[in-house]
Image 1 (cartoon, rainbow, N blue to C red):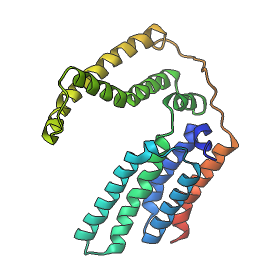
Image 2: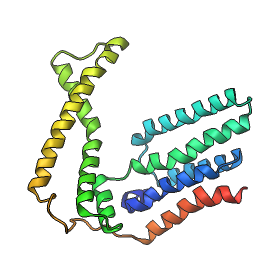
Image 3: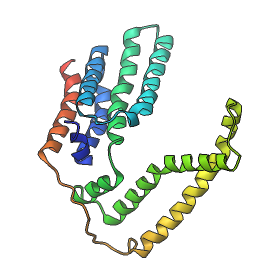
Image 4: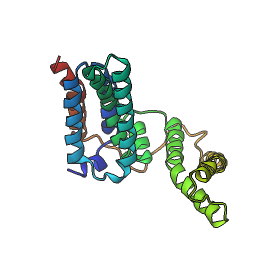
Length: 230
């Protein structure tokens, strides 16, 4: 069951994120929010293959939900039910997209956009290349940190020194990203991306029965569940 997310079509996984947008508007009680989040938790335990890459994403979503619960409770008449609904809406909205986005590869996503949705090849090529470059920003940041540390410009253990080192690292990341974007655009232009209108794709992007089942589960959990609890 852990292989489902790795082998599923990226578009079927994104259905959870799209359905969550509609489902968050349908959450009007604390019970519905808790039930949907519990369903998310069960599905994640059954199908998520690795949790390491999700740690900071889940912490960010949890912090947003807790802060919204606290502010709603503090400014909304100290009503825990209303605060739980507000925090639950954030969890219902953000959790599916945060989880599935961590397991969608840019190249497979581009194949799905071109072959399943029939989007223009030039747009898909540029969009996939941009996603690939964006996915490499974290690795570039670590390389810049190691380079500055080797040259003796690394920050000490002082928190203020670490905060001051963010500005030069950010500038270096910006310069590296712009340089990489220029090289990428020249490489794509030399391979005919600017003039080609019909392209073939190296990897197929089939739509299987499991993808249809994922879409059905996303609709049932995120949309049908809160409607049934009204």
